Length: 467
Ligand SMILES: Cc1cc2nc3c(=O)[nH]c(=O)nc-3n(C[C@H](O)[C@H](O)[C@H](O)COP(=O)(O)OP(=O)(O)OC[C@H]3O[C@@H](n4cnc5c(N)ncnc54)[C@H](O)[C@@H]3O)c2cc1C
Image (cartoon, rainbow, N blue to C red; front, side):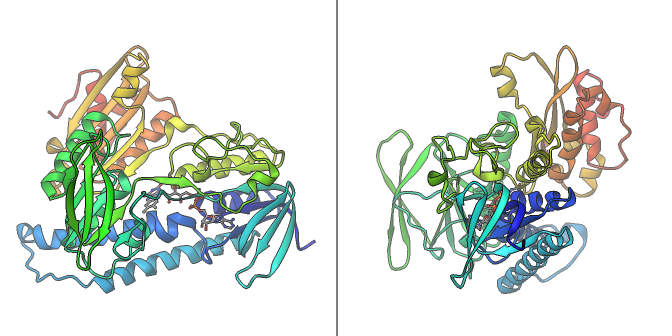
């Protein structure tokens, strides 16, 4: 009976561990397997959490150096990088332990080892010492996540040519850092090292950074990052890297071809995206369908084409975000338990944790135009928000997009301090099918940054009051 389960979850990231917890809550006997040795997946170990810890610490460092004097605070500031890294590791350690505690609390067995699907209903786990254990189960949830997308000609050694994982643990501040890829991971980690003293250049294939953002927000975001000191080489690709004894020589070329140029750097960060990770799982043998990008194909209930096999998180389609994996985990576990779980993909927020932050939910103006949807716009700048003034964080603006006929909120985009927290009101509005008037007539505490969202919502019907 020890090896008999209702559900075995392969992968202990935000998808896997949340699925196991919810299965346990619903009274099912679940196991959660992870090969890493600590639970929490990419997110807790080498993703969201360590990056946010370093973003926080480096932002305070820059603030102390540049802004304290204005506030009447005198301080001698210097960097202790090993201490900053130790604090980051402490946070990661506490949170990964926390996941183990939560699994135990919900009566899920946490198993360290590599899982392989032998057949529907049978998972073989190889422990770190090579010992094999076979689990019998009615359901298998694949939550194996994603891995760094490799860049041809730039093999990652995690010292001079690094992935996001290496960039979270550099032993010293590189004098020069080239970031390949202007997505949110590259921009966040580029910001960390710029604040700590590196000269950072972002090389991006497309003609703009963070391409999923609303265009207007994206343009202003890039201007702000450039003002902070990030250099951008847009519409440019990296075609090769040569490791010299004291510098890396990085060959770049216009994205559409043309004359090559060489840039020198001390560290190169490859952050051109992530790909689904399903290596060694045995998917071919059991016949699980994948799409052209290697993502596991499921129906709307997270069932694969093989009965009893389910997939959630980064290894299937959709935005590669921890909370998307968590939402799918809850819905999938509920479906396994015979309930009716579902995920509303229109209400999943996304956040870039730079300073200022960028957050959005729902449709961008470009998406609404492409879909032929007639919409109204309300905008409000943080320069006119009282709280933003008091905390000296007046960059950016909030923008609310609502259906011109029904006033239903279709998208909200915020560039500004605390945007990642502010966006939650908008996600809730979209989830509830609220109108812009609902936001505009809801009381918002004064003085808070949330008032900027309210004023932007008022702007949809043309009655912004504080501008
Ligand atoms: C630098 C960085 C910063 C990020 N910041 C954010 C952020 O701020 N907000 C956000 O929402 N998202 C962020 N992400 C993305 C987020 O980490 C992922 O979307 C999320 O972790 C996906 O969860 P998952 O459960 O699908 O997969 P993962 O977290 O990747 O977990 C999968 C786990 O499965 C294990 N595994 C794989 N195969 C096997 C096997 N055969 N047997 C046993 N175990 C296996 C792996 O070891 C891994 O631990 C960031 C990512 C990176 C790299």
